[in-house]
Length: 262
Length: 374
View 1 (tube, rainbow over the protein chains, first blue to last red):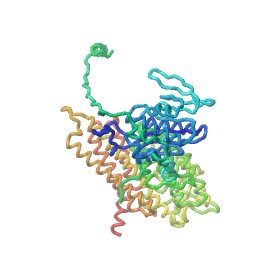
View 2 (cartoon, rainbow over the protein chains, first blue to last red):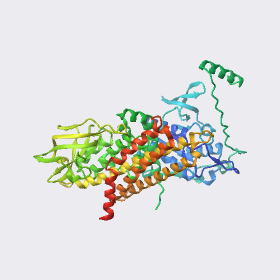
View 3 (cartoon, rainbow over the protein chains, first blue to last red):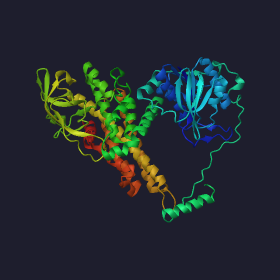
View 4 (cartoon, each protein chain N blue to C red):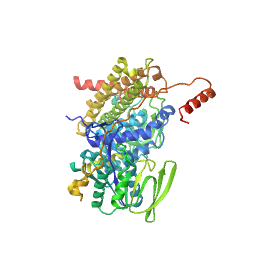
């Protein structure tokens, strides 16, 4: 089974600063991690490989520093890692990103399954997976909480707000992973050393993949960020309601009703 | 001189921290309270490849640097010193067997230790030795194809559990090291000592009565066990040092968190007061200084240097720093720090152990002074 996992390196905090001119995130000085949902995608890919054999290729688009994120995936058990890195890719929105990732996956050749994280910690759009599936013309199942390989296809439990639905699809397909899919393994010490000492990161620039230059990077991104800001958290007031438990509950119910919360 | 960890070292540290957060932190309070290490902890260490870290892969080890091992031990000791202690045994003993053992000994003993199937021990201390190997009274007498070992060993970590113990005994008025299976006939242990802190850390006396050990289980050269002992002392001190740094960092983190949360009547956190800030700053200085002494000594081992002096310096400083940082941390917590509700209480007790285990601070001072005035 040939599985491709798309990952993103994201800043490890909700306190990121934003460039006031471009509206983009300033990544310098903020520790970077593999996007949490993407780790569930990597784990699932490695589990499938362990069960059915095959190969796991991890791919990301990003600056050279994304090397660390790819090596973490190699340490988790991925076989191959590809970094799409080129100034021409920078400033890409989700559309240009999925076009670029899709073009690279086309270059990789045939695949059975593409796994992506549900959404990224920084952008929170949840768009790249679905757009990638459209670009590659394969069926997609988003918000997976369980994946099962059936004869020639997939059976996926897809998380909904109030339950789940079971979706069956043929392969190749694209699935986006939620945190309920699995518990990502912690890379063992020897695998970490091998990820740095034995394995190579393959770097592809725009010239290495067949892309239309007008569809990548900021040039290929129809999205324009007008303004980006961190929501200001208002500190709540704590109030202790006096009286017996029964009295306090009655008072609380009245207050909550007054605020139209119940 | 570059004080920056490499990306590989950063990931080793991060993965060990994730392991500690996921597998140890949730049970740390219970392990301390019930003085009981979960039996599957060693297997979990093995799965994470945290055992035999510095031993070559051909024997089942990880083939890592000492610095990587120190980074990992620091993180594993952060939530509970006993976990760092357990991890230390199946790292330092395989390291000694790799360094001084015969091919057969390496193949027989190292892999089960790396796989967490058995627990290693090392037995030097006796009721009357203190830190002086010349005072060893346990004897090993050659009897055909066997050595007959008789004597008593004191405070031997993990001595009641199955596995190999590197044991030092007197031969020809000098000392030699032997690998003894802990389930040998004539090998018994006392009830484990009740310890002030570090619950789950098991240490007991060993009684050896006519224990027959095959001749082939001599480790290193006959009458030359002192060399092994010195090497062991240096690496085990680094493990203790890493444990002290981990605990001191935990004390600092707990204190900073508490100081930010604890609010005074004027609605300001105590972290805004100068008296608390001074303590936190001083704690941070000690933690960083101890940490870099550890990394320095571990890096020297990786360069093939003899670190008797450096390990003594690092152990002396870091174990004291651990106690002082925990003490200041308790003061930051005020009366709450004296209750078992807060982690600082158990850190305080655990930190004290590192000052007396693997040679007291006074022994470390003598070693360091020996280099100054010899």
